Structure formats: C-alpha cells, structure tokens
Image (cartoon, rainbow, N blue to C red; front, side, top):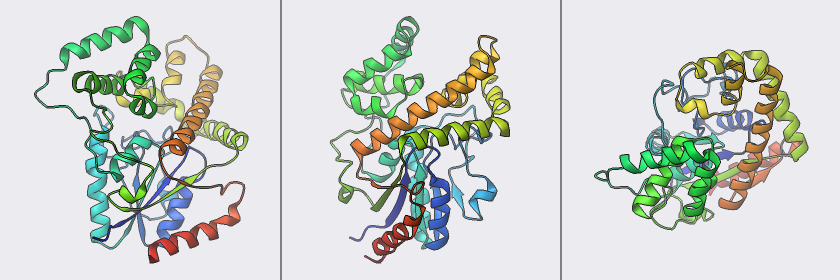
Length: 313
C-alpha cells in the first residue's frame, strides 16, 4: 500500500527552520505542523520562538496556541493530534510539513509504537510520592540519572529539569519494565519502517556560528519582551512551561537571588547546551539529511530539487 508523504524539518534553534518550512510550503502546496513541546501553549510566544503571523506568510500552522498554560500536553497528546492533522492535510491534498526540535515528538508521530506501556488500572501514586521525595532529597540530576540507568532512550529525550516527564518515564519503566518511548523495538533510523513516506531534513551550521546566532536571538527575545513573558510563567507556579529554557532561568532574578545580566547569560548557556544535545540526539537516533543553509544559502535550490524528486517518486 502506498504511504502518504510527510516532510519533516528538524534541528536546533536559530538555524532557519521556520523560514525554510514556509518557503517549502509555498512551493509545494504545504501546510505546517509544529513539533515543538511548548509552542502549543497560548502566551508562550517569544521564549519558544513561535512563528509570528508575519513569518507564517499566510501558510496554515497547526499545534500552535492549542492549550492554556495551566494544562498539560503530553507526547501522547501530540501523537494523537499530530496524526489527525497529517490525515487532514492528506485528505485535502496538502503536503504536511512537520517542523520542530523535540525528537521524541517526531518519533511518536512517524513510527508505529504506543506511548506509555502502562495499564490504566495500575496505581502509580505510591511510586510517584517516592520519586518526588527522591528528587527533593537528591536533586533533579540524580533523579534523571536514575532514569538514564533504566531507560537511556527516554532520558536522552527528556531534559533533566523536566521533573514531571522524568517521573512519568520512571513510573512506566519501574512498574512495567517497559520504556515510556516504545513497547517494542523500533529502529528509528529505518525510515522505511515509518508509517509514512518520510523525507527528514535537518538544519545545522558550524558550532561557533550557531552559538553566536543563539546568543543574538536571546538578546532579541529580551528586547521583544521575554522578561514579561517569563514573569507570567513564574507567577503561575508549577506549569509545564516553567521547565522551558528561556523562562526558568529568570526565576532566581524574580526571587531577588540573581541579577538580570546573570539570568540572560544563563538563558544563552542553556540554549547552547540544548542545541548541542538536539544535534547529537538526531544524529544518533534518526536518519537525517543534514543541510547548512546558514553558511551555504545557495544550496536552497538544491534542497528544493531533492524535495521535488522525492514528491515525484
């Protein structure tokens, strides 16, 4: 049976994913599905580098602004919603273009595996209390290392500071013996085993160039009002966005424990580290066609040609 086509663009922040996705959507009758774990939230615009209306250039974008900040949005939620949008695009003869840097989200969308591996009748409350107490006693890094020791794949996909997701993954593996990311072995590097006919494009550039672009982007975000956005997240307490880079770094400043310059520097440092982890994760776990359009913008025409060839197959 012929598989429906899905174009995917991945990579770290500040390498031009938004601009490329809009260019390809205009050229190939496409529509864009966000693969970012925080862009689903209303009001988290600057810190998540959410595409503005101007940047979207009239191209429909999905899975932006679909949750209030107090609501949870899991990988399973993304898998369900994302596949619905894929099916809708295909039904209307549109090319779906998935854009993002959250690797586990991309895998959950493209491959046939169930998330969780946990029966609904299992009571997790006792274990959750134990894991929460463990985190409070030993810290978030030790909690994450506990997950890494039992489920390396899940640990690589979850930031240590995202305590809720770390605890959720530990609940699954410790109660069921199965990974939160897969119930059976799935070779994510084998795109032929995906549910769709996938073309997976990755954007990157030289590390020093990337880091400078990230630093410049953070400065621009601050100028555009990131501090106000971060304070809004801070005032809401324990919400999913509070774990996001670009928000949590300002919390010590709001508490009077740090100055603004230090907080901004921490955002830059954490953003650079996350970009490095993203690149390593995609290189090790998925078959990505890598392009550097920052250093070689003239290669855009070549990239467009490869998409044309793929669509014509």
